[in-house]
Length: 381
Image 1 (cartoon, helix red, strand yellow):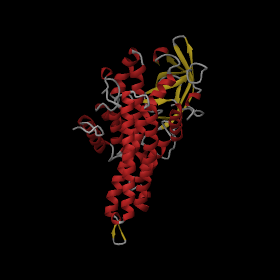
Image 2 (cartoon, rainbow, N blue to C red):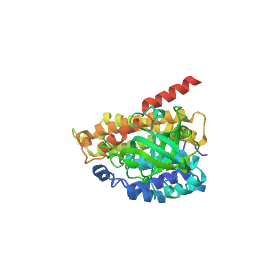
Image 3 (cartoon, rainbow, N blue to C red):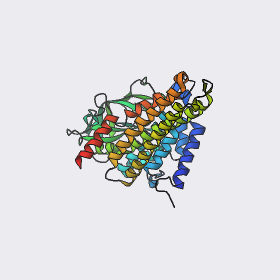
Image 4 (cartoon, rainbow, N blue to C red):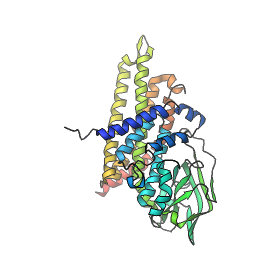
């Protein structure tokens, strides 16, 4: 009898492929990428060959057409090596999916072949200096002028900004707060497009973050995704998947730190015995493992709901994102405690995961906004 709460053979095969790719191409190098703020573009190209640049892009568009659970398994596996790298793959996938799902045949033909293989890498630009959680308050304007839109404004905290080739941008074309927002695809070399200096961050050093600046940047009308005024609804639809992916990145990072803590506490001796022999250590490890499995189960369930288009998919993806990112950071924090002073050193990977996972409860919608979404949905019934 098949277990409905277990992965299928195909899902296990995808998971194992992503785990092998990570062990060979990411894990051995992640500490150096963090230290040198290196953006591993060469690794993207290799990931693209496996289809990881277009996980839920339709097969007829050249993607691998998988569901959101398969995507979460890939992100979780890659975050075991480097959460920043894995999260970046998620952003690229969200941008590629948006073009595939809502773009015209012409737009898809022009952009998807490069994005699917990760020959070209995409960024997603919604957030602005004055609009974070209140995303619909964005001010970047796109004024229609003949067969072009003229863009003016600044986007903040854009992953890959200044390095990536393609920017999926949300801009204001109308007065209405949410319904006045339109989605446009902008090339890096468009005149009038420039980039701020790379931000100096606590973590996610393997993924550059910078402002994206528009000064009378002209974007052809045929680069619009969908119709005018539909952009915000695309952004919100994309975030259901993005939230699952960022939660999955927390699960992968936390699993790595739990595994490292189990190994370390068996080897490290104090008071004449391994740390693992103390009941306190065993209880801490047990709670870490339990918390992680509970968060994983909810996230996988939410992923299935998003794939099937369940009516409560947004509530579940918000719940899963909130729990997985909070639990992930908690597990990593406890792993650091079990490592003691050594956990605080860069000689061991724990502090890097501690720094990288901290931002997961902020981006793709803060965990406070996640509670807001869940609370509103409960009261709507």
